[in-house]
Image 1 (tube, rainbow, N blue to C red):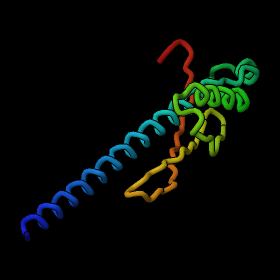
Image 2 (image 1 turned 180 degrees about the vertical axis):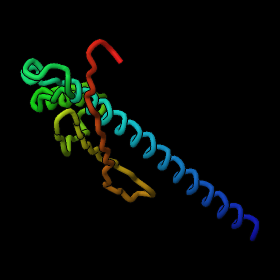
Image 3 (image 1 turned 45 degrees about the vertical axis):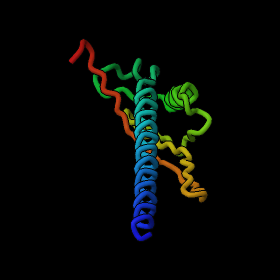
Image 4 (image 1 turned 120 degrees about the horizontal axis):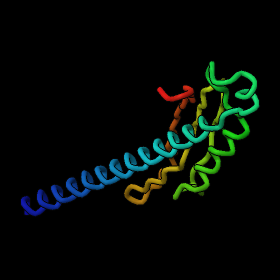
Length: 135
């Protein structure tokens, strides 16, 4: 009888470990997807050159970014994402040639019948560097 109990206990522990590994792997993959999406959004925003400022100052200095165009580009990247309905734009800022983007996405975990409502957060930064005539 003792061997049967030990066997059941071992199977229960194995099941719990496998479940934790599965949850951990799923969380890691979701976090990596969110980070890649945040990076893509920041890069898209950094491509929104303020053409008016560029035409006045030229390419001799770092070209500033148009905040409204950058925000529109970021929202377009988010709209096209497969998980678009779950991702939220938490923060967005433009400073000169720098774009900062912060996103969040809910992470619904369920372990042994208990639901945990958690959120993943990712931040990214991109800078537009324009050099006339190439590097």
